[in-house]
Image 1 (cartoon, rainbow, N blue to C red):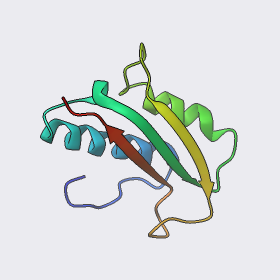
Image 2: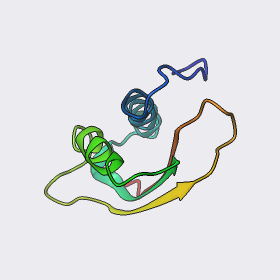
Image 3: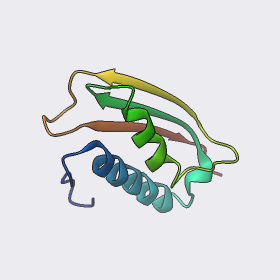
Image 4: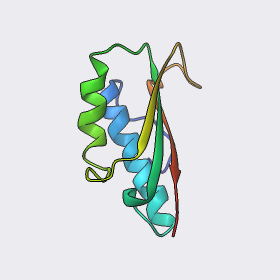
Length: 94
């Protein structure tokens, strides 16, 4: 969100907020998710069962006909203890 606070303490809530934040950044740059070329996910204590949650949230935002390249990396921790996910995004802005 615009204040930088994390909303939710579960992966789905934090992913949704992360993608909404990315959408806001893309909009400010004059574009949208169609310009996203790559997503890199950093997931705390990744388990294979998380993949369905990740895809479910991601698919609400990305261009499903031409999805961006992606990488998923399981990590032990992120910048703050309550962070469960970080998504690095590369977009090609027209």
